[in-house]
Image 1 (cartoon, rainbow, N blue to C red):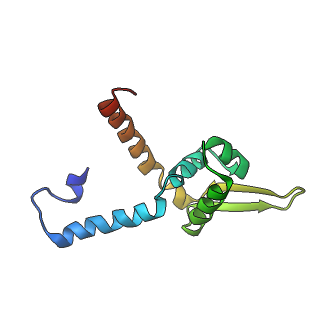
Image 2: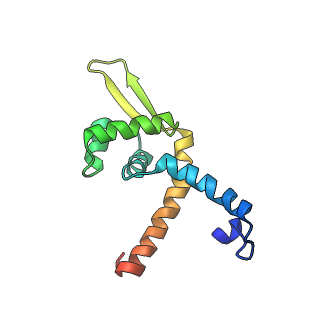
Image 3: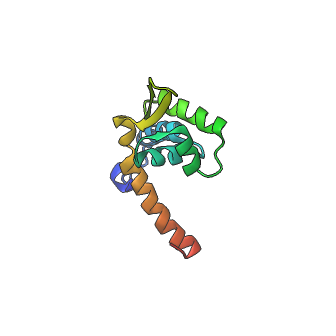
Length: 122
């Protein structure tokens, strides 16, 4: 896929930086151990905090809360508070967050192939 971005014979530093910077920006937004698992969880539908905490093994409530705030700040996740008793808070992907589905699917497929290649398992 990189061939379509940078021709292998083109060693122009400016073009290289133009390819690196947007990837770095994207990774800055979805970096870390937990952001992609949270986004993946929300691709299966809106969730309450406790549902996500159960679905994502080993994440602490404090870390889940922090990562959800970061994802909200980057407009990937929406937090909706329902006026009910007790108050219900639900998280969902924004349309912008849903735009990552294709990227995540490509990463998943690459990961499956990598696992087969390196570990010899599916």
